[in-house]
Length: 206
Image (cartoon, rainbow, N blue to C red):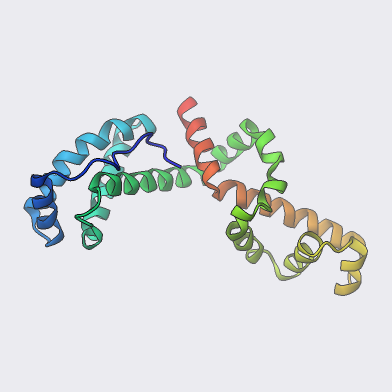
């Protein structure tokens, strides 16, 4: 899922770029300066389109190239460097919008704006593609609430069956399940890749 549109993954590295990339891999400043000069110009308009605050773009750009420097040993001269750095930039943008989404006002706005999508999340969270997120959310539940959710939502037990297994009242099971489901829906909604795209769309509309 690419937020930058078509990336330059198919473009081979030219001879001079290969030489400078080799220099960068070896930790030479000359190679880094060459790559920074070339790719910051390519990244800038794309990042400005996604994040409309120049000060934030500057910070994210520095973050991208810090990651390039720290991970220079991973550069593969036989593969497109453009594709590699664009992927780093995309992940950096994702990270920024995840931080934006932690703002309570932004969360409220997103839930109101995408209410229809959010209401469908209960089916969405059980999709096999979201298993990892679902498991993460379940593990964050209090022990009793976690057991109730697993019994009722994963194993398909009735409220009464779960209540008998856990020595609780049916009303307690019902209340705890409502709270567990609400938490898990919000967790999956605010941590999914699809949410990041919704967040970007909402933020750019403001």
